[in-house]
Length: 604
Ligand SMILES: Cc1cc2nc3c(=O)[nH]c(=O)nc-3n(C[C@H](O)[C@H](O)[C@H](O)COP(=O)(O)OP(=O)(O)OC[C@H]3O[C@@H](n4cnc5c(N)ncnc54)[C@H](O)[C@@H]3O)c2cc1C
Image (cartoon, rainbow, N blue to C red; front, side, top):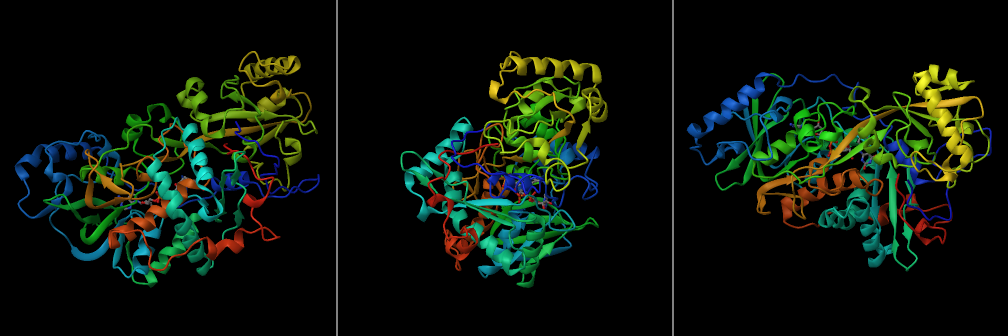
């Protein structure tokens, strides 16, 4: 579960227990909070839009069949009309879930021209729009929802001046190793090189709009035993949704145009393949054509709600509930139709639990929905879906149970210094009463939690036998981590695993330009955000905390700078110096200066 060799471990939770207060400075707290925030398109936050259904497949097929006879006669045309069949990375069924249209669109209610056109107003799209106006460019954004829609709250960057080359490279290698060496080194390097400016810029602009991060940390930094140092800053926003709404308003006040409820349904491409614009469809069915003199930035999020794409690209994960709605891979489809290609597998999925905080430190006894033990409980949070996919019935989706008792001692190595039961109840940040139940007997616990009593009791009895012998014959949990269920009251967290993101998209080069099958950039087309490239490349998203949002913010900002200037130099740069006071400890120091700094990376 942990790749850790820290001499100091502190509580990840803002607990107010009856026991002595535990300082809240560990990065795990950040991670816990990251996945608890409500974003714009969380399940239940909005009603699902009416998507093109049923007839869309037929329409797509008809369009494809008709394309050969509709060869473009103008200098520019809808991007997909150059082909007589779908590119290999697309299937007709993909269009059943997406708003992207194949029939050539030639009649427009409005036609406007900008320097930059952005597709999607989320964590990548909004920084792209704001950067464009700050750089003096004209910009418009097509947004599918009625508002900005973004998620998450953590982000991070490396302070190069406080790090050394060996430390950064060893750190990168550690993360690469965790992902079977499949990370994309160029995109990791982009994060190293440009997040250092882009993330402070996002933080600064947020603060100027009255939105200050709730936490600033440097404890993900690593001082390796060979002298390598990587200095890492993490910032946690209350909510990226609120932040992005504020930044979008700021951009609008400075002249940016947002078209809400106007999804991009097609790109426009000239005969030489250059992407020259994007077509949006208004809520009353009219088309608007936005020409882009300098570039189109695709920032339309992931494809978790496109069942066809999920089934093809991550068949084993399709049973998990989706945390978001309306994320249908439109940007991927648009990019591929323009000549791009999908990242080769794996498409790193973020499949997480609804009780992330405790999971990171307590490998509680885990039972399936059927009441059976199913895994070595020390499995990392990011990988729990793997054992579940072997044993969990599809109809149970992400459901499972985590059990613990009321022993008072700190009973796990590398634990929190307190027993888990101490954290139950009033003031405990992570024991949500809607997911935590208790019982004075084991039978009562099973009944209250909805665990099939007979199988649950048998599993607990067997587990207690393993605890008594101090070795786990069934799943190989190390003896130190086996803790019997023998002290009432007993507790159960009703676990729910869901998919919160698919971090893979159309392939991009080292400047996030969408590339074709020969690795050549498609002129005028960039992809940014979770739909861009293969930064991780592994099966599960095992990357530095906050990397995801940081590469998303960063690519949003730097694709625009690159489209406008051909370079990567913002005209009014931010940087660590502008925000370093927030990250400094009370004595003005940073964790990377502290001898008790971690000496290896930590994963959850
Ligand atoms: C609950 C949750 C918490 C997360 N927390 C973190 C975290 O703390 N740290 C981290 O690093 N990562 C986190 N992630 C993962 C990821 O970083 C976020 O999902 C992030 O918001 C992705 O940013 P994005 O801009 O790529 O996509 P999004 O923010 O999803 O934005 C895409 C936008 O495009 C719009 N759109 C879609 N299709 C179209 C179309 N056809 N035309 C126009 N607009 C379109 C969407 O409405 C949306 O607004 C989290 C994910 C979830 C779900």
